Image 1: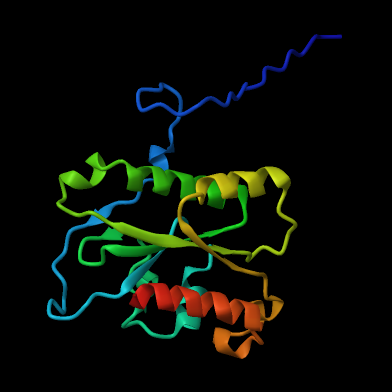
Image 2: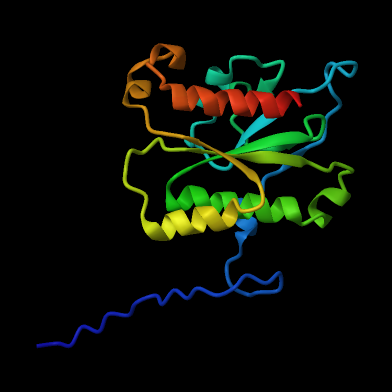
Length: 192
């Protein structure tokens, strides 16, 4: 009988350093759209920016229901990006490991001022919305990771709502009072 040796790719976890040869969080960095405001005489709305696709950005925007205060550009473009005329940003993620990892990459980009100096754009992250859109128990490791990544910023939690999967308009989904309080807090932060 032949000995079929199987080699495994050994993944290692190590602390990120900018000069690290290993894969870094830079793959999660978002592009910066340089564009003048289409309405320069108005206060720009807060940009809802999903850190990756499918985290619930459009649903949160529809629940906020006022694009003059809170804006989701994913209805217009499917490219997730910082927008120079929308400096105030609320990041959106979900409760999956990949969502939190993408959030960590975007937060790293946000804190790396050299990313924005060349563009003359300085974003202001007002907070993070964490959407439970998968209805799975969050593992303690992901919970600790999420707590670590969101430490130091405001955080709003949107719990799983099964009926959101069955309606086109989220306002028809029987949203709990607790979720409406989180939505109200997001809009209040956007208007302050």
